[in-house]
Amino acid sequence: MEYLAHHYHADVTARKLRPFADMIRGRRVDEALEALKFYPNRGARLIEQVLKSAVGNAQYQEARDVDELMVKEARIDGGPMMKRIHARARGMAYLVRKRLAHIHITLSDSETD
Image (tube, rainbow, N blue to C red; front, side, top):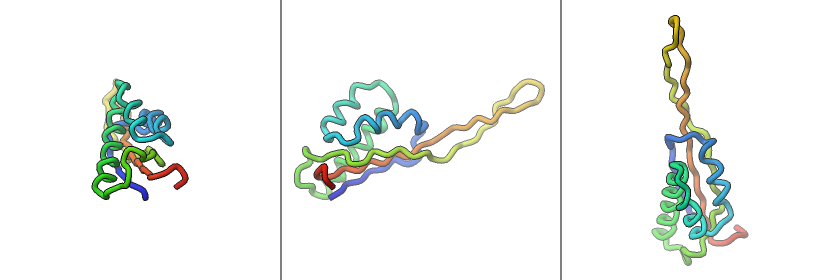
C-alpha cells in the first residue's frame, strides 16, 4: 500500500529542495525525520512537514505498521514562476523570476513495492 502527501506552490526553488529529497529517498520514515530535524534550512522544514503529513495519511488509512514505512518516492518538481520587474538605471527593467516548487512524498509498506 502507498500513502501520498503533496505540497503545491511551495515558496522555495526546486533547486534548494532537491538535496533534501535525495537525502531521505529510500530511508525509513523515522530515520528521514531524524535526518531532516538537524538541518537549519527552510527547505528541510517544508519537506519534514510534507513527510509528517504522509505519515498522518498512513495512520488515517490504518496502515499496518507506521514505524516500518519507507520513503518510496521523494520528488521535487518545478512549479510556476511569478514574474516581477526590477527597475534599473536609465529606464531599463530587469525581470525577476520568483520560482515555486511542488513537493511529492510517497510512503510504502515495504522496500520491494
